[in-house]
Structure formats: structure tokens, C-alpha cells
Length: 86
Image 1 (cartoon, helix red, strand yellow):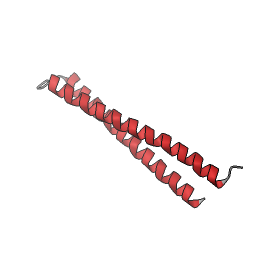
Image 2 (spheres, rainbow, N blue to C red; image 1 turned 60 degrees about the vertical axis):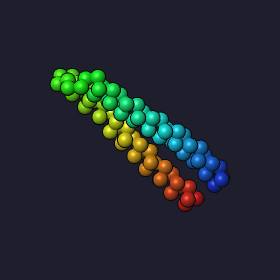
Image 3 (cartoon, rainbow, N blue to C red; image 1 turned 90 degrees about the horizontal axis):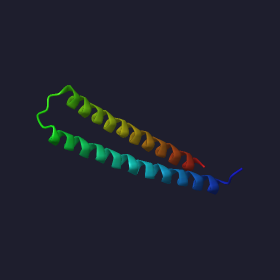
Image 4 (cartoon, rainbow, N blue to C red; image 1 turned 90 degrees about the vertical axis):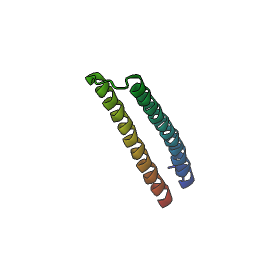
């Protein structure tokens, strides 16, 4: 059985991975936002259904990344609560 110190260290290592994942999610959100802006400029005034669908898909992707970020924040909070109880 692992000691309390070993458990806390393992959780901290896992949380570092989560932090790196959160940074990647935020970078992906920024790239999606940039792509959406570029698309809007390139297709300014476009009324095609395909243009609207592209914007909607990018918005959905951004929201799903936001949901993922929220889930990771909840996981970090739960892991911190657990280590505090050790």
C-alpha cells in the first residue's frame, strides 16, 4: 500500500497532466475562434447554408471544449478535496 505522501505525489503528477490538458484545450479554443473570425472575413455577406453550418459547427466545437474545460476543473477540485482529506 502506498504511503500518504506517495498518494499525494501521484495525485499532483496527475493534476499536472490535467493542467497541461487544460492549456491545450484553451489553445484549441483560441484557434477555433481565430478560424471562425477568418471564415467570417473570407465569407463576409455569404448567405449559403454551408457557411451557416460551418459557423454553427465551429461554435459547437468551441462549446464542447468549454464543457471539457469545466469538467477538468471539477476533476481538479475533487482531487484536491481528496488529497486534503488524506
